[in-house]
Length: 300
Image (tube, rainbow, N blue to C red; front, side, top):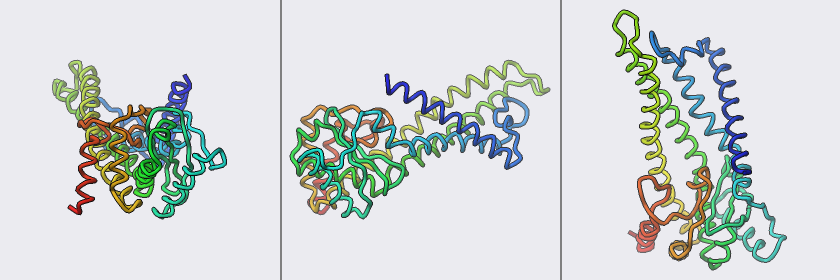
């Protein structure tokens, strides 16, 4: 129930901010904000571009800025400082050591109840959050868990959270812009050439929603592809931080024998777990990741 409430509040706030920003920018540029929604006549591409960019980017950026808070609320993660016990002290000190090696500031460290998984998030590489589940702490050896933490710290050091957000925002803007342009052209094609429309408003709506679905799927495939490449880089980064790929290989093999924890959609791409590959997966298969690390180990 808490997740649903948080989702609704966050999305309402984002929509409100986007509408305000859109009208402010349009007023600054002297653009008619209603022109972005034209269904017939002349389509103001300038207004549409402003609308698409703001609505495509703003939601992603606000979500990124709130990512640490949303992440902790979503999974019930509790921040630790190492004074809670021996395991927590080891976890904090290990993250501190990896942060120094990765040349980033110490992130917040958190633990949450759940099956084997871990994730990193945050709007800035020097103000990040690294969280691990209780199950992954219980099931892995310290060296394996250290490799997982190295993987997450590599995400932080590479600025993957920001890159993913910018990519998603740009693709969102493209989907909005192209959907409206194609729908506008289809609606105009339905006119009789004398300014009278033959159901063009209905055609506009149908084409717009179809293009939103089609282009949205295409955009998602690009995001998933990039996310999978990012995972390979984080695995290699962990190997670099630890000085050997063997620990990360062992951690991935261990994950293959565990039931991976399911994270909320907003955190899936930032998690460590993901057994099977597909074009709709945020992670490569464990086998492919292990193979890539073994090639790195052999110096190929």
